[in-house]
Image (tube, rainbow, N blue to C red):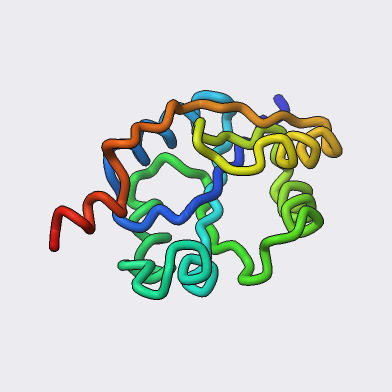
Length: 140
């Protein structure tokens, strides 16, 4: 039987219910779930100097403890060009890139997935009331 690999990427800083819902839905799309987490360097570039709260190694361990993913790894620090994404998708053998509804550059991601005969699937509707940023704001 061919294994259908589903790839998800993200920061996954302070794990919350929306992360869990998203990952559970993504896992249902195939029989192998692979999670790529943003490096500490990239998170600082994307989210600001005060982030991430948890290091990439702790975030990786926290995701592994969920026992949802078949593999969790840290994305390369240079991961902002379409060819970087294409190379990763080929390397992990992903046929599905699972995203949430607020994921940026959906059209570009779909074009990349089409090059490997795959698809982008929106598996989760973004809930603006729950995020790591909001959790951090409440904790102040």
